[in-house]
Length: 278
Image 1 (tube, rainbow, N blue to C red):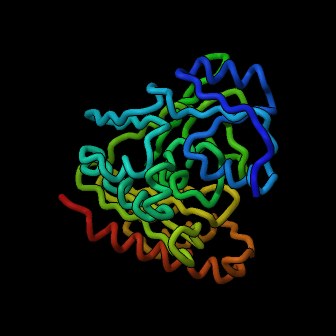
Image 2 (image 1 turned 135 degrees about the horizontal axis):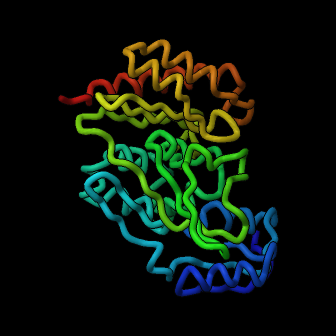
């Protein structure tokens, strides 16, 4: 289908984009890569009079790898996450996860900001950002504020970001030296959402576990991470499975999804443990 008519805007800075959101209210939406919004518009499930393209905003781009943290601009594409040598060395799980998103055509255009901002429980990056203890900077009419990824997702497609705010950058602490990592994903075919996915970090700095597409938000389990840090693999799996709430859909019934989640998580934990160094 063809989307209904709309007015196209391409601002050059964040302030102009926010001004457009304020001017047009519910009739306007920002677009990054467009892989979530454009299909909805084509299906006439989203009706917008104004589309605000963020592609020309330079301040939303760039990757900075510091001594203790990494900052990623919201308009950085999945492909740029994969090909940035410094980022791949500092936080290799980002590259591992990005390589499992859709296909190369999508990864060349799809952005990390778009992936985390719209609250789709099937997206890969939100759970990973929770595993990494990332924070999101959002900017709106009242200025900038930081929101922890672990506090950002309220329910499917509902987040702590207000309608007039734009997610501008993501900051995450560097994992401790020698941290083992793994992102494991089971899906029906290339390009599909995960039936279940798991992100795991483990090392001398502790452990962190998050799961994707197994509830209406990503699931980060403090209990699972604590169990894994204590060397209790099965305790970590049990805690994570207790935290998820999958629903039956085209990817299978609830019990099947729980079974797949357990397998995926055990694989991720075992692979992460083989990568622990020091």
